[in-house]
Length: 227
Image (cartoon, rainbow, N blue to C red; front, side, top):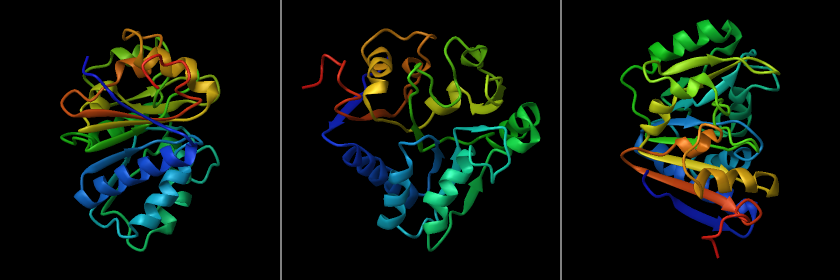
């Protein structure tokens, strides 16, 4: 597996700022961008809107989504709308949200069709404390999917829809933004150990481009190769 570009920052805001700059570069280049939810990327989206208020050339996708309406507080689309889209002077040329309100099977089938012939320029990802990324959970059958571009994923709280590994790893840039001590063990398993379905993030690397990992010091605490 190709090596990753590990970048460790003294403060969470510095890592989020680095993510914002990468997002702006991709938006200006007009490449398809897959965004993520969670608590870490919100400030990065806000800064990206400040740095570049014109996203007219950009095309936005979502790496995963919960099967909820777009105005539900748990929606990844809603997070991006509030922190990025609503702050832009010019909206992206394409906004391709996952219609989670359709239910996992139907929403995944629709997204699978939409993603045909799409190659991501950038996929922004997080990592959960259990090592999941997007909605690819430890030892999930979804990790083995190689034909479909999006699949429905059962989960204990609410069903999800996720891009599959071939789509995410096809991005020219896979960018992980991971913050906080609670993620340190998962970060070590993802980037300092052998690939393992028990840690889905360890399986995701850009196959032909670069994989960039943006960490604050608490998240990087268990990595031996970081000063």
